[in-house]
Length: 202
Image 1 (cartoon, rainbow, N blue to C red):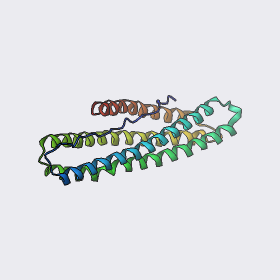
Image 2 (cartoon, one colour; image 1 turned 120 degrees about the vertical axis):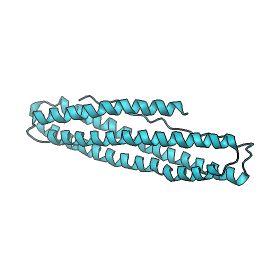
Image 3 (cartoon, one colour; image 1 turned 180 degrees about the vertical axis):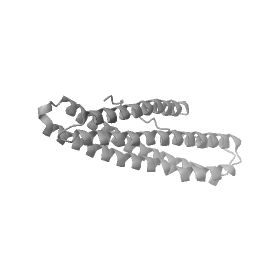
Image 4 (cartoon, rainbow, N blue to C red; image 1 turned 45 degrees about the vertical axis):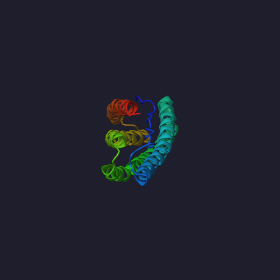
């Protein structure tokens, strides 16, 4: 089974220069406050993503152990497959937490939209509008990517459940492996799109 390289999420650092704006001082402060909230959310997102990558690498190590076992080493294979399932379950939970962190920014973006409607400084308004649009598109691509990851995890779990049996159904193993590989090809393609887009708006 071909495993993708660890997926790295490039994080945006939003830097909007508010100095010298014609917008009122309190308005600038409110916008700046929301931008700081987004930056904090990004740090939480980054932390969860690093944990997910670590779990991916551990699970890959377990998979490599499984395929190295000989037929007589069924006990070791079963034990290792069960550990891999535990890692998959942990990764699924981390993906949910990561997604929740990113979607916390939905409310912040909504508040930014309302603040920006009242912004008199055209330069600042344009920058904030651009940030809002790019952020929304980034979240949309991330959601599609996250859905694919969850589908892959579901198939991988079925694969490891089969590998955790004393007698393996070779046809089932082939089926789950094929499905998982197909999904991961889509993951890699969409992840490249996500990273390229994120790079383009830095």
